[in-house]
Structures are given as structure tokens and as C-alpha cells.
Image (cartoon, rainbow, N blue to C red; front, side, top):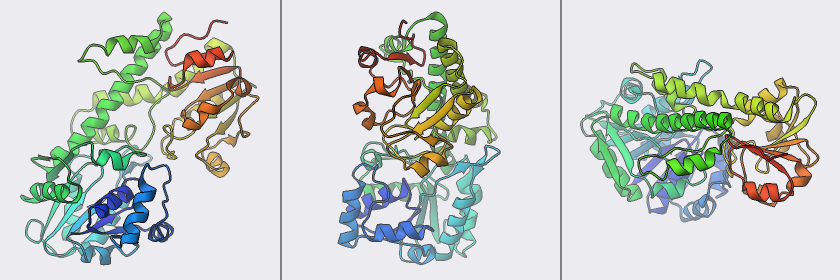
Length: 423
């Protein structure tokens, strides 16, 4: 099968390479000419994506995969079209669909009779039917007669996309009568994947928002419980471990908020919809307040931060992946700066320019000589740090460190919802 993958970013490129690995001819389409040239040379633009480098070199060398900036021409060659363009939120916290709409308009110029177009992203409920399908029809073909449209949410974690492709079923829902069945058949062929066919695109869209809302609300609950633990002087880690020993309880890990492309964004899609969203709104508020709470807690335990030198370690939104959208590190910087701290940032996955782009002054390498270190993303490289030389006090913003090891080195430890090391 010939497949066009529109958008070869963090999700689209691993998708395209995985399809090509199974012997299909794949054309990756992107408006970023630098990325297109890099991919065509077999070079991996995302070295932190596990397994992608070797896979990409293999499928490019075999001739099964190539990239182009001419999306319409690529679509003309393909019977299957996957649109993997990411959707974020705008300044009003509503879905920013501009890039996706532009991609759909371009796809419409090349769509051929008999084609199947699947939007493989995350969207507000109703977007595929109401907004995207008509844009494809504007190319002159009729939905349900000349081509089919379906929606399938991406259910992949950055850094392990290739692994996750084989782990989770593909959820699909069609816009036209045959779209869902065709999409299910498509994914079984190109991935050998288990599929779950829902009755409509709207059901599939809502299923992904349900996943995101569940995780956001669960983390909000964990965060509120962590604040309770601080009030009562108990350790939230052992509380959650005990609660989760009951099979119907699955409390997540507290921290200083939620970052990344997914969890802070997708509940907003529910909040802009026609249905109720009071819980999603509450969860967003709780999680958004955590960086401020963390800094207040730090001051409560250690005294005023004004003039004290603080380093934030790990500026990406989660460990071991060089992705920074919606990272809570910038929220910590805002709150620390408001408290008068002198703040620097450190991240082994980012260049100094990348650190500065987030608003931080780069810390020395290795980081040392600070009054306080806040571990925001516990990258694997930090396992080799000499903690006493970094700072005499560590604030574990994700409860990710080995507390016993930190304290054994003579460093004071504070976690989220965890009692401080006795003075």
C-alpha cells in the first residue's frame, strides 16, 4: 500500500517509519524543508525517540520511505492518508486548528477517488465531521462516494512511540458509513494492530479526551492529597502506595503540575465543547496552581528565597525526552523569580540557547554551588551527580529521587507531600 503521512514530527515520523518497516511505500510530508532533507539522508531529527534512528536509516535505505514538502503531489500517489499534525491551544485556551486546517486544505488538492483519509491526532469532539471533512470535499470529491474519512486518536508516549504502537489498540471512528471499517482494516494491514472500531468519529474523539481528562483529574487528586499530607506531616508516597494496594484505586504521582503536549491541553478541548466540563476545569486549576504551591512550601520550610541561588534541574516536561511545550519548569521560574530567588536552569538534553529560550540563565556544567536545587525532570544523566556539590538542599518536584540515597550523602531532602529531612 502507498501511504502519505502528513506531518513528520514527534508522532508522525515514527508512525511513518513503522509503516515503511512492514513493507509499505510511505511518503512523509512536512512544511519544514530542513527536516525533510534530514530524513531523506536517513538522519534522525529526534535522537531521544527510542529505536527511531536505526529504523529510519533502514527504511530510507530500502526505498520504502522518503520525505517531501509537496504534500498534494504525495497524496496523489497514495490510497491511504494519515494526518498527524499536532493541535495545541491558543492564547484563549481553545484548540488552535490553523495548522491542521492548512494541512487538510492541501490534502484536498491531491486526494484521489478511493482514498481513505484518517486524522491521527487529538481534537475537540465534532471537529472531524464538522470542519475537516468539508475541507477535503472542497477539493471536488464527495465524501462517502469518492473517499472516506475517519478519526483515530494518537495514544503514544513521546520517547517510546515505536514501542507503544504495538502495545495499545488503535481506536477508530468513521465520518461516512464505511470510514470506520476501512480505517480499522487499514491499521490492521499497516501495523498488524489490534483495533477498536467505535460507531462514529465523535465517539473516537471523545474517547481520547476521556483518557486525557482522567489522567489530569487523577494527578489533581494526587496533588490535593499531597497538600493534605503536608498539613498532617505524613508521607504521601506511602499513603498512595497503601491506597493503591486496593485493586480499584489507581492514584497517580503528585508533582509541580502537568506539562507536555497532551494532559494540560486536551481537557481544554472538553472545556470548549457543548457538554459539561466542571471537573476538567477544576482539575486544570488544581494542577496549574502546583508550581506556586511548591515555592510557597519551600519558603515555609526554608525561609525567604530572596537572594538565594536556585538551580532548576531538568527543564523538559518529563525525563529523558527533549520536549519543552507547556513544561512546568517555566512556571517554577516565574514563581521563584517572584519570590526574589536568583534562578538558573540546567538540562543535559538542551543547548544553552534552548535553556535561554525557556527564560533561564544556563547553570554551569556540572551544576554546583547553589543554595537549593529543584529537580523538575529527573533525567538519567542526573544519576551521576554529586549532590552535595550541587546544593545542600534538594527539592524533589516529582518525587522521583531515591530519598535515602540523597539523605545518606548529607543533603537535606524535600518532596511534594513528603516531610522534610529533620534539621
